[in-house]
Length: 216
Image 1 (cartoon, rainbow, N blue to C red):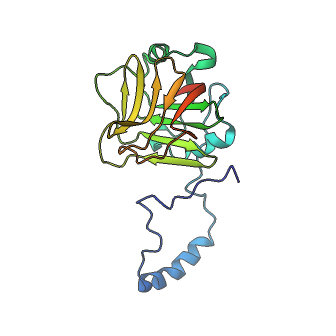
Image 2: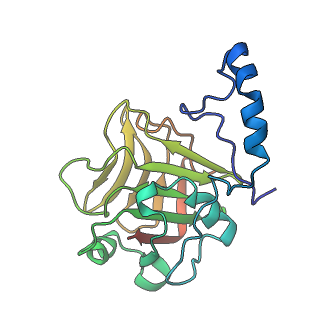
Image 3: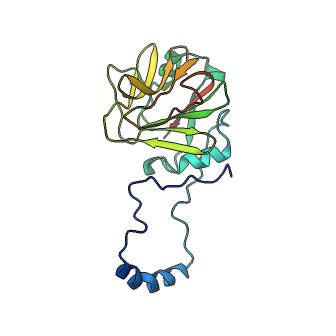
């Protein structure tokens, strides 16, 4: 089912099933008592409020993505700072639109195959001499279920903005996601930063629509 949340089986913080037999027996009664008391599900996200409708993501995709955003942006509105349908296909224009914003950014796009994917950047997209960002940065793809590729800790090649390209994630000369200066052509390759799969259906793609949302 498209709207279901993806499973968290790969998260290193999951500790289910690690209790010893004795500890499990001792806690059975307590757990049964706790289950009898209604409580809100801890994973229920605060529904994000968008300043305008997205031309890329539907309500289901927005809800799924919100589960993987850092707690510090929970409840913050999503402000559409740049979109190709309104602002044109220009990376330099994207940089200009980002001026004055410091908050984290959700970059979402749809390619010529209808594939939806993108990246979360811990800070605003900008021109830079080197890579910047933090371990909050991640890549994602709906294929069609949501897959999120978070920082591996292998390197710190999060985001780098040139006049002619935008790069996110790197390793062995390849980028997890890169976009050209016209925001028309792009590419996606497995990289050490996120240990990601190819985000699109093919390594090189053409962009149909791109949006940049500031979450602050």
